[in-house]
Image (tube, rainbow, N blue to C red):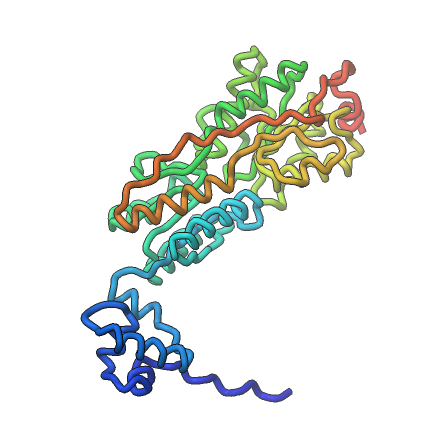
Length: 365
């Protein structure tokens, strides 16, 4: 195997100055668009830069100007389509304003998030958009806020941190979705999410992630209003994506197994649907099913799925525009409240009169 060709030396400001027959200081001012330089000289320097293939050193420029025209984005799981679509909105908003975006994935790990904040600040990003892995361990976010660096939170709040938050009202739409299940006759409604918590769910458990807490508030609130006893007994948290299927199987094997399941996001939904298929259970004949977030595939399943739809792309755009407005000390764009909506399709039906039907057969096997 032939060795790679030697790395080509980067073209420097000195090279451009020599080619344009000006001093290095004059070339730097013309290339950086600062200081007093005549139009004739600026044109000559820029023509030399183009002829030589000069690329500016963005780190050096940011050290001189204090601005990098870059925003950092930190999310928990880029494989989650929610964050992928939100990232598209952020990137489109940033491009429109002439900003670049650096994305870091943390796998919902607080230590990784702390390290990501440090790395992005070291790279002199002008502002940060973060979907916090925890509302409990937030010293690094408070340090960003105290430094004066613009910070926008996406999808999740941190109590006591006075920064812009881009999110939808999850509690009310989760209440509506659960009430829909109750109205068609369900009294055993399961809820599955991924969260690193110790032990089973109980009242007062600190969930540390506001978006999950809001969903659960609505799910339990609707059942409590309907007089359903102990709805929290059918709440399950998987420790990471690998734990979703075991949790779903355990829930469905209970003597009083749920007749309906609500999945907290689309990745959880796919794992739960796969588990139902493995167990030979049909939606909605054996188990009714509702999931958060609406993607194209949810209309292609048999049956099409009832979902809670969020304006995810628009939320990403709003996050990008908000952090850039803060960076530029402009008025933050007026933002309407983001509303999620329940989209009723065909994955919800009344529970079987035999109190679970195939689920009871599964439990007995």
